[in-house]
Image 1 (cartoon, rainbow, N blue to C red):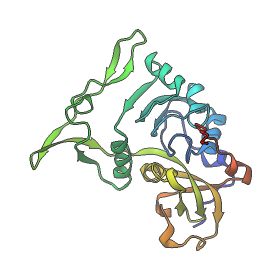
Image 2: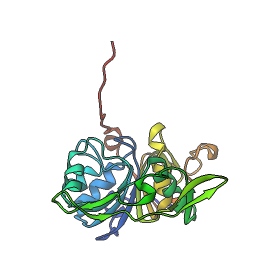
Image 3: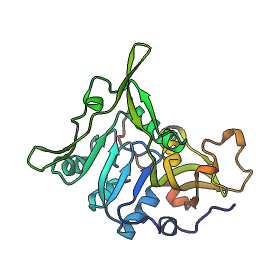
Image 4: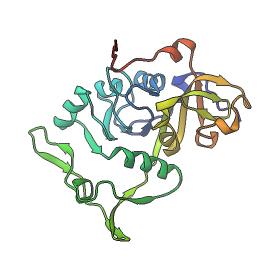
Length: 251
């Protein structure tokens, strides 16, 4: 089954107002910038985004955030994104912060059909007990706080119950992909892209190199095509456009 779509705009044409999105990437690594830009061009608003972070250096999800297109973020890292912090503290944005490993597992679990799981991460903190600010009122007060979660003991150790995450769509970026949607990710871009892809009911992958079926050794596939519905082949210029978050020099 050939899943290749001609353009990024066509691939995200049915992402509607208020849709939920799982978006791959970590910092500036493995971010589906071309698909995000296509969403920006369409002007879709009220999006609920699940991603490790919400873009950086005016790229990735930061493009949608700055345009006021995102209503809610589920993530684990604000980092140096000043606009993300400003919108959150001003009460313009609802934010659910989750331990990073828990976020990855919630995405993977949702994609694997697991509705919930227990983890020790967050036990004894507001992650489990509730009270984390999801939305501020713009005056320094909390307008909406996280609810408490179920805590249960197994073999003398406490664990908190976390729900699997499913989203309407997922946007990911892969180093290589074939027409059947089998994907290979490069280095650190592999950490959040596969679970994000699994969580989406409709997953769109932009690939830096498109190959024919059989062009990827089955043993080298990081994400099988069963999780991918659409593939967009990037141009050489798009594939080469990779920003560096922090340049360091060593003598």
